[in-house]
Amino acid sequence: MTLQEYGHIHPEQAKDFDAVAPSAGEEADFAAGDVEETTGQRSVGDLHAVGEGAQIALWPERGMPTHEDCSRHIGPNAVSELLNLHERDIVCAQTSEQRIVRLQVIKLTDDASLQARVTVWER
Image 1 (cartoon, rainbow, N blue to C red):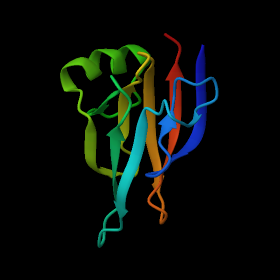
Image 2: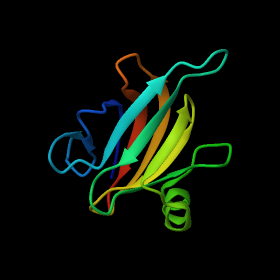
Image 3: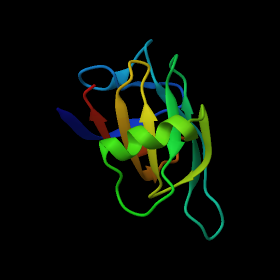
Image 4: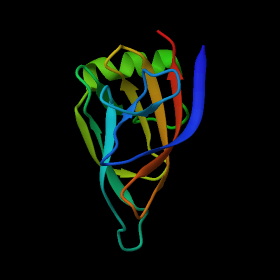
């Protein structure tokens, strides 16, 4: 089963993507931070893996990665934070409960949140 939604990830309110409906809470996996506008470029922002065992990796290729693509990519490329994300960047992630997540950055907003199209795959 796959859950796909648009969501906001706020710096002060990290998201738990292991919940049936991803939400803010104590078991959060990911948080945004330091969104800023750059001259003549798209906005940039940061994404942090804050949950125990949560990992993130920037997708380096064109095209939308599948569950299998993200799963293979995370292992050798996993980090706890991605700095200077831009609109349209794609991030593969793994939650603290080992679910694979794909985040496509849609917009970086003035309130320092990151708006993304999020796909969460079942384990």
